[in-house]
Amino acid sequence: MVIRKRIKKVILVFILILFIIINISGFYIGNIFYNKVCVMQFDRSDSDYNNFKYTFDYEEFNLLDKKDVLINSNFGYKLSGTYIKNFVNTGNTVIIVHGITGSRWESMKYADIYLKLGFNVLVYDSRYHGTSGGKNITLGYFEKYDLNNCVQWVKEQNPGGIIGIHGESMGAATALLHSNMNIRTRDVSFYVVDCPFSDLPELFSEKLTYEMKNHGKIIANAIVFYSSMVALYKSGFSLYSISPKKAIKDVETPIMFIHGANDDFIPPTMSLDLYLEKKGPKYLYIAPNAGHAQSYLKNKVEYTAKVKEFLMENNIIDNKTDPNETVKMY
Image (cartoon, rainbow, N blue to C red; front, side, top):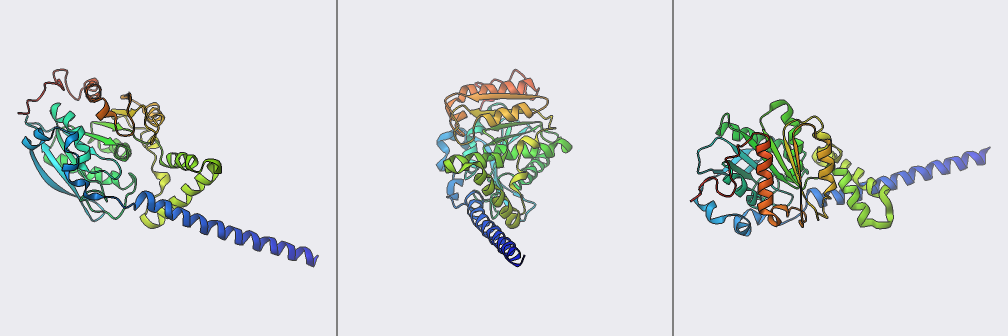
């Protein structure tokens, strides 16, 4: 009897020690992964448009009426942006949201589309990017509130004007998360999302499973779990709360989903999943011969035509607006 009690005690102590070791290891690895994706070090000088001026109509940009703006975040920092007025007097504006480690100037390639379709454009640096404030990246969670502040800023500039949002990669996911907020406010009339992920934990799990090869999905899911715990402790958000697929479930605002057919960073199937989940007006364009965030650069004419078709189908613009000869810019 005494021996059995001792054996049980040893087993319980062993289980407790094992539990502590597993959790310490989990939080250690989780912290590394959190730092890798949320507090990464990268060159933020990309805010200089000289790095990207060959991706958009640079000469036309210099002729446009534009101004640098600062937009307040709810979290104690400023968002740096550039507001570009169309040559044609209009209250309609598209807000463009860049991807992770990018900047507002990386988004400028999309501005060409909307300027020629008669919209004003607001591009801005997301938190912890370019010259905007913020201590970390939250992969769309707090970014959606910053985006909503940009929407409110545009509303103040152009009361009654149409507002659209075009996002790329993490910016696309941010836009989709915001679309859920828009169910109540109805401030935004349409969304165009290029290469979004449908569910962040699912994406991370797939990536980690692939990188670890033979270690399986269990360890990958464990890393995501502990990373989420670290994110919740350090930054106040959970990775599991970043799920565009869940966010758009009841969204009826028109959404256009775009994805490069050869995207090996975020699989095109994620846009398909989002498209199938979306109720009401929607549009899907899988761009040929395009990798991640390359759909427009590889297919400018078709991409522009598809965006125009989406906007026409949803009565945002009329069929008199020709992307090849619309607003005379010079």
